[in-house]
Image (cartoon, each protein chain N blue to C red):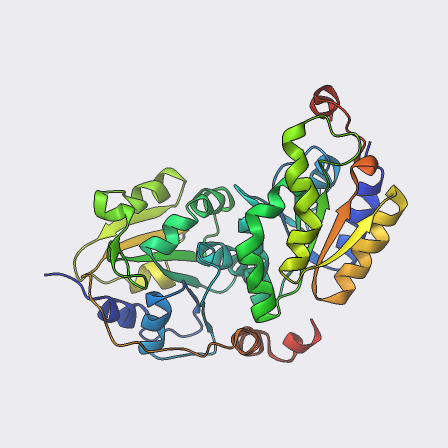
Length: 191
Length: 170
C-alpha cells in the first residue's frame, strides 16, 4: 500500500495543539495548507534548502515548544549540510519530516537523488539525529512529532502524483508577523 | 589580536542576542570564542554561510535575536537566500571580516572580496564598513538597534592578517 502525501501531512498535523510548523517551498507548503492553514505555520515560497535550518533556529529560540519541519526531498537535498549542523546542536524538540516522492514536483517531476537510492534517513542518522527512519507504511507518527526526544528525522516515501494546488498566503511579511503574533503575543511588536 | 572582539561581544550581550551562527574564520576567532564561552548565547557552527540566514529567520520567528559571523568569501554562498530577508522583512545583523583587500596574500580571495558589498546591496542588505578597530562595536550596536538587514564589514586592514603564517597563528 503506497502512501499519499496529503493523507500523510494531514495525519501529521492532526490535533496539532501548539506545534510550530515550517514547510519547505513547493508541494509541502501546499500540503500543510490543504491540511488547514494556521498562524503557527510558516509555509515558504523560496529560500530553497533552508527549511530545516529555519526549524533549527525556531527550535533553539523556543526550547519548550515542539517544532516540526515538513519539506520535500529536493528541498532537503539542497541543504544537506543542515543535517550535520542540527546533529551538532541536538535540539530535542525538533522533528524534520521529508515527504519523499523522489521527484522535483514543481519543475516537471524530474527524479531526485532519492530515486537513485540516496537514503536521507541514513544521512540524518549518521549526522547524529536521535531517531531516524524511512517510513513506507501507514504507522502512527504523532508521538515522534509531539513527544519523542529528538532531533528526529522521518523520510516518508509517498506516491509521485500531481495534486490540485492549495496555496497559502504569499505575502512574506504577513506570514512572519502572523506567526510571531500567534507565538509571542504583544512582545512580537516590540522586536 | 582583535581587540574589538570584546567590545562587539558586549554589544551583542547588551542587545540580548541569544543565537550566534558562525562559519569558523581566523578574523572572527576571538569573538567566536567569547560567544562560545557565554552561557546566555548559543553559538551554532554552520557548514556554509547560507545556513546562517535560515537559522536567523527561524530564530526571529521564535522571538530570539541572533547574529551571523562570516568571512567575505562566504557572502556569495548566501545570495539567493538573502531574498528571504527582503520578502519577509526579517532583520539580520551579520558581521563580515573582509578578504581580498589591501594586504591580501591569497589571490583566490580577491574576486569575492571585491564583490562582497555589491552582493549584499543587490539583495537589499544595508552595508556599513568599519575601517578602524574602534568603529566596529558602534556599527554593530547601531545595526542591532535598526532591526533591518544589515551587514557590518570589517576591513582587512583592521583584521591585520597578512600571511598564511599569520592566519595559522591566530
